Image 1: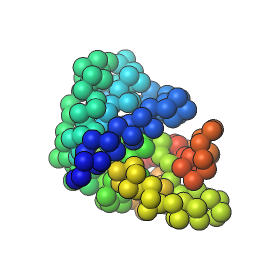
Image 2: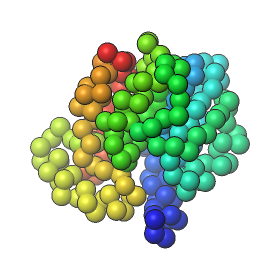
Image 3: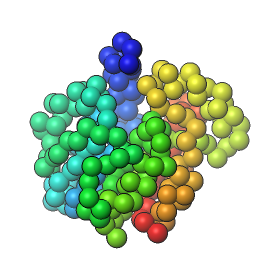
Image 4: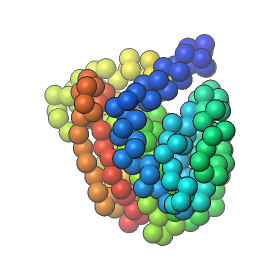
Length: 206
């Protein structure tokens, strides 16, 4: 990793993900989590203040990148719920089968190296009635916007340390064997459409 990827890129991405509009979207999703929670791509810990200690037993936060985890030290110290951090890729979770009640995936599928394998791993560690709470940006359903996303993606991926604009969120969940119980797709207010197409919802293992 070069200097930008180690020191500048993670801070740039963390600042973007902490913006007021994005934080408001997180507040709609994360408080729904219950039981033992797996958070994929916990990084700087932006979701931690949103967990409800009356509903969550503990959070297992997974992230492969030390530089992103370093940005979350202060938030982890003030976590409202018991917390375990594991530095590992989502594609190879060091967890037993069927131990997780809720998986939380927010602004993460865009940057994992193999999102299909990551979702298969999430499905493996979920209990039979476990849920996935997701809030992701990805490939727009509008062909014109999608064309711009494909044009911009090579530049954006370098700028945002591996983040992609072109991941088809619903398709990835479907192909990983999840049943989508609820999904909303919309553009984030105030954001350029190529980077602001969001999918939010709840899925369960089929």
